[in-house]
Image (cartoon, rainbow, N blue to C red; front, side, top):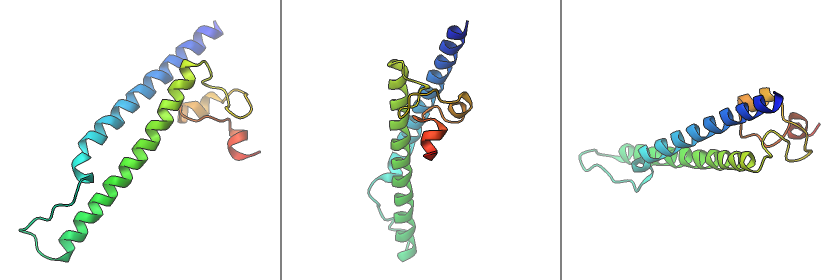
Length: 117
């Protein structure tokens, strides 16, 4: 029974991770234009318009980097699921608390190893 519950919970984590990865891809596609080359609006005048455009571009690029990093963590968690290592600390091998995985299923370590305790 415990194995069935664990398998069911692991499937739920997998589904959540896949849904989050799809959401990240959708958001990334939607913001692609903002990350591109800054084209100045010839109707807008002044330095502030250019600064605003450059700031929007920089913010979009930073957001893309955060999404890429999150996507890499999601992919790593999905690999751990496929390899049967999900839910176990990558440092000490102990189980990761379910509460910790509920907060972020991409975490690769238990609290003790994450805090260096």
